[in-house]
Image 1: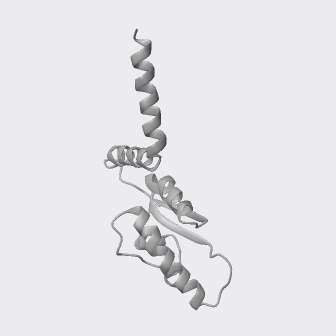
Image 2 (image 1 turned 90 degrees about the vertical axis):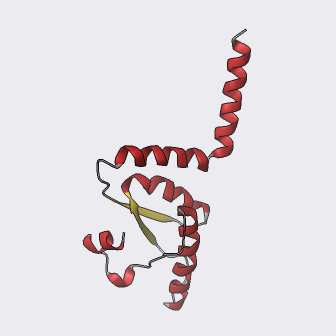
Image 3 (image 1 turned 45 degrees about the horizontal axis):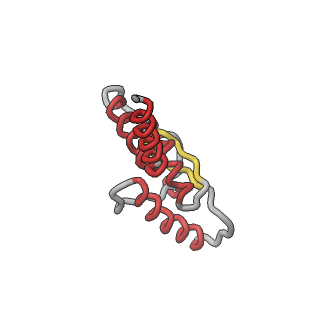
Length: 120
């Protein structure tokens, strides 16, 4: 993503890398620490304006995670190879169902309940 940001004109000094996370939520948690430390070190007050880079298919779910940790962030999506897109979209669909797991579970229970009782 760093390479992509440089290609689209983002200055090197504006890019903060995070390389310890294992998933998107951890990435935002670790990035939040780095961003706030850099923000305070620069003498700024208030909330920083954040632009994050990810794959174009992943921007929506990443935005959900940024809101969950309390950041108002905008996402920029890097292009994805067409051969990878079907797999990536299925993965994102499952990821969003997981993000909303309680609602998903309740909908599945209601659907099973209705299917069982409407069958009679």
